[in-house]
Amino acid sequence: MIVFITGPMFSSKSKRMEEYYSSATYNNSDDVLVFKPSKDTRDDGYIESRSGKRIQAIKIDSLLEIPKYITESTTDIFIDEINFFENIPEEQNLLTGEFFIEREKRIHTIILLFEYLNYEKGINIFLAGLDFNSERKPFGIAPFLINIATSIDKLNARCVKCPAPATHTNYKGIKDVEVVVGSDEYEALCAYHWFKAQREKDPEFLENNIKKLELKP
Ligand SMILES: [Zn+2]
Image: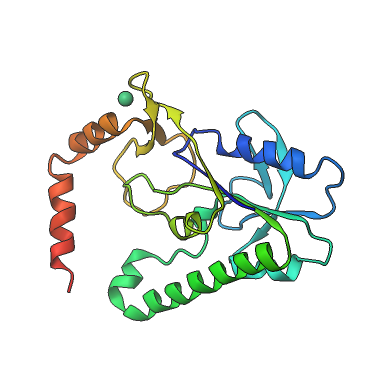
């Protein structure tokens, strides 16, 4: 089983992961491994849901570090904030195609690794993270791993502007860096209110994005 838990910020992804973790560790927690990206500097290696539950996690830089922690008795692995793994800054992609190729190779290797761990070793894999960033760009490796999931828990938050389910994350200000870590600067919105919010920041944001694409070779 490869389970992917996704949805915008504030959609209780960590809480859902804790539920899976509680059932996986019902008899024994020694054979269950939990990972999170070292890039997430908000805490000392805990996965913490907004309900306050904490699970100790191993911090890693790349998903390719996972095999060194696996033993013959490992039954389940949990990885939080999956979207922060294997990201290469966009400006490097523009400078040279090498980074792009490097990323493609990494993604392919990780897909093979997860399928091997699951099908050959019988290890259940639980992944949680954002599928899109606040600009609706596919977030890191997440969209690729959604495709190998045997089940996807796509969660919604509640739109802060109306009672509709929130499917989008909005950055409340204007971003000057790609990734702003933290939750105070973000809010969950339905698609209607998300588009409205982007138009308020830049009335031609969609047109400008399409223009950018046309400029690429
Ligand atoms: Zn709304």
